[in-house]
Length: 418
Image (cartoon, one colour):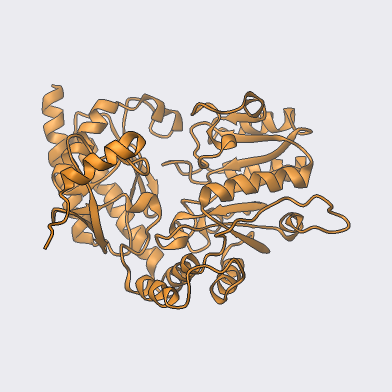
């Protein structure tokens, strides 16, 4: 029998064949050679048999834990019936009906490939609806990999797009409304993560955006790629009580398989249809949109979330994690701040106001990397200062275990700083 390749061999192949050596954006702390073989529940296992508690969860794409039996069964059953048809299937028809029922703003839904596609198409729909070109976003936001989302963050963006994207500080309603009013005749959309990176909205912020957008005829877009089906079954719209015109989904929706969705009002969504009043429809389509495997996984995920006390449990674990981290922070010499809501937690190592999203620009990268590395050595996958996530597969004891290790790592780092 030929032995399977070692982690070192696989790592070297990845580093040689992939720019930067990684397929997404997570690089384990050096000099680790993490090659994941499988996941189960709250844990992942590498090719050499080491196991890790997973607090990254596929960049928020896993909410029920890895290889949840209901998702595995649904996908396995669908594989036997075919993997792609480029047509409406039982799974896709059932899924869109469920999404219209679940999402407060959804009168109609379009399925797309992933969350980034959803935000890209949502902005196209907003431009088609308003016949305007500009977009307002918020400092430090992440809305995917397309040009409108990456202005100022990457090379290769046409200068004309730079001129079409406006930026305002998150949670500063007065500034946002001022920009909206100044550019009202040119502004197609305001796109916002209702839970912005690791920061919850301040009182009245989302409500103020809703009021100003309605008054000025601007399309309000919620990027719920992270918050959708994680903060609540109805997402941030349900949790914060503000309804946008369009909302974008991905990540948790697919149970770990690639999928995205745009939900919105009928009058905007039907701009994708050609007709006598719409000779140039807004194109929203793709070969793998509504893929039956992804739809089957999504339906299974939603069924579990809908029929259990998942959100009560996720909120309980999230509060346990944040309370414990705050105790650690209070005893630590590190500038450690804890943010979050429900099952999403942020851990920030930086001096400054922990309620101000701009604090992320001053993160102590060296200290954050050491915290991440120390936890990796103790069997935890985390990203600092990004989201620490819990799934329904995590347990109270596992959260306690993480907190004990965070305390030990922070104590060691504090001693080194003194």
